View: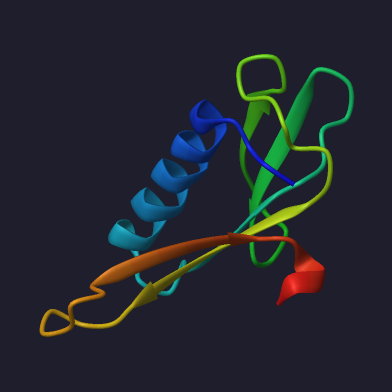
Length: 88
């Protein structure tokens, strides 16, 4: 699955904002669009946002976002991975 840049940018922003606010919030899920919108939840299924499937297309199945912090002395730094659940 290939997501449009506008969609990946939005997903990265939400995942990073959550992680920066609380480093325990490293797992975010964008749920498959139903109609004209899709939900974004935390790892416990609690709603974070509902976004427009027209403004942010491409969410046809659940997508996971995981933020990994490799530390300030690492060349990787913060890494956000977008993947399908079966890829984990």
